[in-house]
Length: 180
Image (spheres, rainbow, N blue to C red):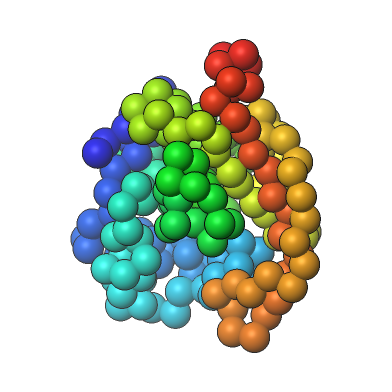
């Protein structure tokens, strides 16, 4: 599946994206705040593409202007989410490289994923979360209409031995339709 917005193409990650992925995912301000370790090499990024980023409904966030991926977004449906949600719901996750922070690209990508999830996948609700201190991610969720639902403490993340506090937000299909 390929999705498109005014400035972005959301498409599956490809093995040849490894260098671009490494360029942004190796920055220490990107992964750890989102709960995953910095990428250590192009080969490490290639392994992440083949494993994690090859999951269904996972997309490279590609700038139309350059054709290069600068971030990632995914929709984990039902059991693929670790929130214990039914198959009629999904959880969105995202990140973008530091040079592209503050340009509204991730809210643009999230809005398209929401449209796709509600209109094409017929989801009833979409969830999202952010770890304590990740104010940029919190702001994306607010801009996109997500509402605070609950907070979970001692949540394990992909950083070995690290437990975090996660704030969970969501938006129903009805609320999304009203806000359109």
